[in-house]
Amino acid sequence: MTDATNTQSFEAEPQLGDYYALMKPRVMQLVVFTAVVGMLAAPVGVNPVVAFASILFLAIGAGASGALNMWWDADIDAVMKRTKGRPIPAGKVAPQSAMYLGVALSGLSVMMLALSANLLAGAMLAFTIFFYVVPYSMWLKRSTPQNIVIGGAAGAFPPVIGWIIATGQIAVLEPWLMFALIFMWTPPHFWALALFMRNDYDDAKVPMLTVTHGRRATRNHILGYTVLLVILAVGTAFTAIGGWIYLATALVLNALFLKGAYDIWQRDEDMSEADNFATERKFFRLSLWYLFAHFGAILLEAALKPIGFGGW
Amino acid sequence: MAIKAEHEIHTRRKSLNVGVGLMLGGFVLLVMVLTFTKITSTDFQIPASAAKGVGAQIGTEATD
Image (cartoon, rainbow over all chains, first blue to last red; front, side, top):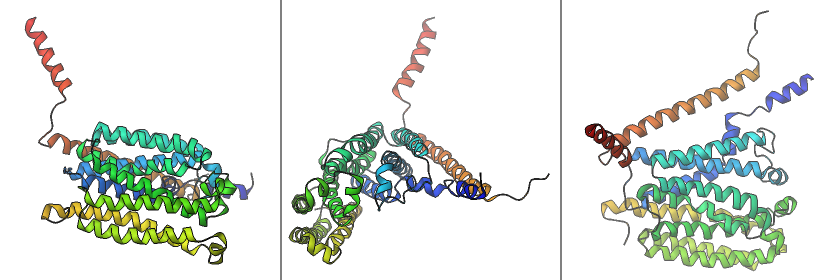
């Protein structure tokens, strides 16, 4: 072995940050935020220690599913520009290490959430991890253009789990409204990304809607899903988790979001390429604020209720 | 021959090991605090099955 290979071998040794990157920290942030909102919007208080521990275990579970997804999708990630810097395609972490980490943390997080909160919350986390890894990553993602629609459900479960942590109950409308909000938001969010990432999904042979049905159909779908999302998001204002603050937020953001989707629908590829997909990029950025603001408004409504504000 | 100054690989591994160690320590502490919180809460009850088991044992001894 030469000096050069020696240097390469130890420089490629994984650091703690590489394992952390495997857990998709940005997705974990979204999971934590929406789960906290789900927990605090519930009509039952939670002990702060139990709440902290439960949200932490939920975040670890989300991270574990991220690691398992990166293990399974390493071949796709290596091809796509957006993902080729991830720890496995970059050669920082061995695929098997990611798989072991994912399996171990999945088991730990489910067990600990069941102990810290309740059995139903643990079972729901187990189902969410399973749904993200097996039906979505292993099956749907590579086989149907509806991958992101059905797979989006995995990302929509955290507020439901947050609600279950507080109440131990699942058969109520409010957590499922929060679920539906994320579920309906996911397709336009990812399809906008697919429009301006252009050849990434083609190269990786992932059957995104842009690849299988074309970019015109994707623009139509973005508008269609946005219309449904707007109805749902504004309608949620008139339920137990809504109120004046939520209604005002929803009206402004949904008007902007609908305008963005309409603009995307009106454009064709020539127009998009002329300004490097400026409208699509703007819509994608807006979609991040859209979700954050809706859940922030639900949180604010819940936080203000004890002092006589919030809600109807 | 005496062992020379640490190679960079040792520094790298040390930082990973310290990180994992701190996380495990934090996990143990969290479980301890969680357990303390749960058993001191007002609605804490000994699980019914465990309580029944204790009772049944006492009952058997009494009949003997």
